[in-house]
Image (tube, rainbow, N blue to C red; front, side, top):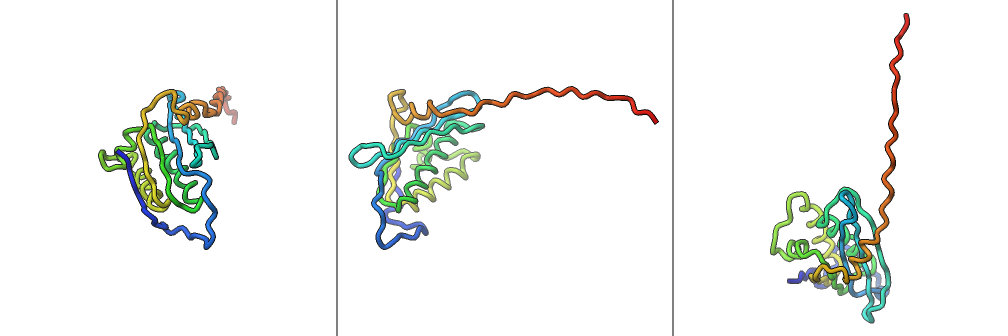
Length: 168
């Protein structure tokens, strides 16, 4: 099950007459639960020679794995469009999201907007392929997602208010 989109479509992105060669050809994408209210995403951009050109690790609050995976794909696709489009493969360890993008499952109502946004970006990025991979601890993007820095939860200070009698 893989998803293909946008063979050569420009998607409204203006291409220079001398486009810069893209520094990456594929991206490893993962999302991992860090704690109850936070999910980490990991993206590793790879060149054709398998060298790493860029890494992104970010913690997202108040979200679930599927929404975080869509956010990670959005970030990766925007990078692809910013690089001038081309041919890209995204290896994703969230099989449910890959199936939704392949049309083999429906995105739930709360994920409809992110799903449509990712599909639109896929059409604008050039030739895009989304390939499922097994979620394991050995998947380097998953390890990166688990290392995402979580901002400390601010301590809530309790204030005591005193009600003083009013004198007239």
